[in-house]
Each structure stands twice: as C-alpha cells, then as structure tokens.
Length: 367
Picture 1: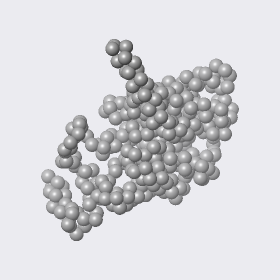
Picture 2: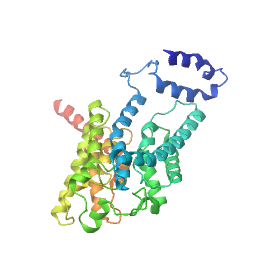
Picture 3: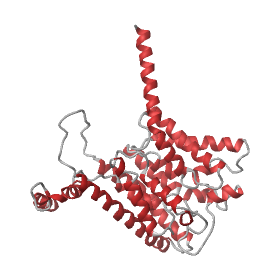
Picture 4: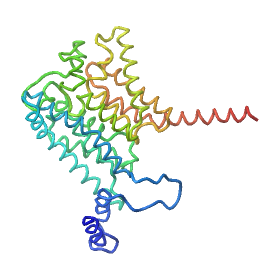
C-alpha cells in the first residue's frame, strides 16, 4: 500500500536519533490514526483485539453524526430558511467554524502536552472536540468556544493525567465553564438562533408557563430551538442504537437514566409540582443527549454493573429535580452528570465493599 510505504519511509526521521525525533509523539499519533498499531502486550492479562481506543472513539463520532446533521438542518429551520438543503447548508456554515475552533484548540493543547511529557497522543479528544460545539448555543462567540475548550482540556483532563484519568466529562466542563463565566452568551431567548430571531426554548416555557408551543412529536423529531446536538431525540436514539450494537456504551446506564428521569417526572406530576406529562423531560433540553453520550462516558461513570444502575438512575432523577425545583435553571442535565461524575468512584467503592462483605459472610456460613 502506497500510504503505508510512505509512512514507513519517513518514520526513521521521527524516531529516536532522527532529525525530528522531538516530534515522535505527534508522528505516532497520526500513524496509529491511519493504521492499527502493530505493537502487542508483553505481560499481564489483556484481551487482544484490532479495535484500539481510536477505533472506539471513531465509533462514537459516527453515532454522533445523526444528531449533528439534523442539528445543522434545524439551525436553518429555526432561522426560517425554506427547503431541506438550504436550511442544512445554512446550519452547516454556522456549525463548521465552531467545530474547527474546538478541534484546533483542543488538539493543539493535547499535542503540546504529549510532546512535553513524551507520551503517546491521547485519542479522547476525537469525541470531545465534536461534543463541545454540539452542546453550545449556535450564536456563542468563537472565542468562548476556544476558551471553554482550553479550560476543558487543561483543567478537566491534563491536570489529572490525560485521557482515562479525568474525573469529569470534559465536554460538559467546557459548557459549564462557558455557562457560569459568560452567562449572557449562553442563556436567554436570543442565543439559540443564528439570526436576529428570539424566543424561549421548550424547557424555559415548561418552567415558566407549564406548557410549550410545540407538540411532543415536534420535540421528538427535533424541530425546536436548542443546541445543535440536543434537539432531536429521534436522531439521538439512532446514535444510541449504534453505540449499543457495537458494545461501546452501557445499556444499563442509558436505561437507568431514562428510568430515573421518568420516575421523578411522574413523582412531581403526582404531587402537583408540574402540569405537563412526565415524558416531556425526556424529549426536551439535553436529557436524551446526556443520557446517551455524556452519562455513558466510560471514564467518568461508574464501573461496576450495580453501580451503573445507581449512577444512571441518580443522573436522571437529579436532572428532573433541578429542572422542577429551580425554575431559574431549567436545564439540569449538565449539573446532574457532573455531580454524579464526582460520586461515581464512591458508588463503586460501596458496591465493591458490599460484595466483599457478602462473600465473607457466605464463606463463614459454609465453614
């Protein structure tokens, strides 16, 4: 293969002793992105597979595409652009700069840290770089996208040691940073549109009036204002099917997040705190997107099977609790997932300790 021969030809230049050996980590990152690594483990117990982290991350990117593509169309639709292709093209041109800024800033920082530490390039930003613009309002200034991305990579990942070591979901950290540092650019009735149009989101209408101007079907399809990746529950569920079919994401977490949201939604409906159907919580805002792509992050979520049920249920329950109890902040999914990210290790600890205690008791009874 011509590309493989070309890479092998220039490889000595970037290897130890070569003229550009100081760029070895960068070269290795590109090489392993193009080709499956030919290295194998030499000790310990491992599962040998052709799918490395890069391939897993690419699977997630593919799963994100339905929500992203529909979100681009919806940007144009909300701006009043007639026709599917003109509306999509309008949204594409609005989203493309955000995606480029996110990847350029994030990958530059990650490459710099890898070169400084002489480590391999981490692959996690393949997903994070796409998630960040997908959870941002379409009108957010690009400098806020850049600053939020830098904060997420440096404070959210690199200070903990890089991909696989972070405590909090980096994409949600970027959104949280932007929301609390630059609130006027992240909330209100004008930020969700790419033109001069203004209007409250479905969540804001539910929080203030107890209803929304769109039907449940419109919300399910995604023909409502909001962040590009979060509006279409239908497109998100297509992504969920891809993640579950490939075994990349945990079905336990997905299912329990929706169960927790519905349970608390029906609870608040029963006691009279809400006047709209409980399932609305699953269709509007970032609930479905968070359940499928954020809560299931294997690094920041619970690791034990029992812990995944607890973690997921609490994510969904807390999201609805924040939405209902605090009308000033109608979207609770971001804070809910970040809070449970911090508690995930504690959940796993108690699950493991409970299993150890149960087995000790069983052994004692057998004796």
